[in-house]
Image (cartoon, rainbow, N blue to C red; front, side):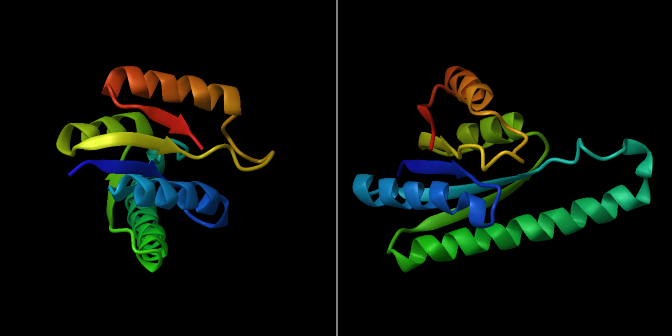
Amino acid sequence: MAKILCATRGGEASYHTQDAAIALAQERGETLLFLYAVDLRFLDKRAGAALVDVESEMTKMGKFLLLMAQERAAEQGVPAETYCGKGELRPVLQEVVEAQEISLILLGSPAGEESVFQLAGLRDFAAEIEHEAGVETRVI
């Protein structure tokens, strides 16, 4: 069965994207797959043992955020799976697309001025993902 892949950062800023994904899954009769990527590029790689601790804690946080998204979908009668990947978002997305039957990829819009993403850059990123993965990709 085809799935809608919804990349999420978790938390309140992601609710809009999650709600849109849930509505689309209801409309299309598809399962959702919420994805969280643990990307540690922002850390100094020389941190050594601390890096392992940070990765472990961020993975736990990511799994918790995914569980919350999954519960939000279940409350609306939408089956949802979760995947917590490690690394940059692009290769993690590609890995999931190759392993699953994905019909649509959803990415959330930048959340306010503090976001590291700019909308134009995110749209370019979505177009690149769509081209590379061969799956329709939308920015919500």
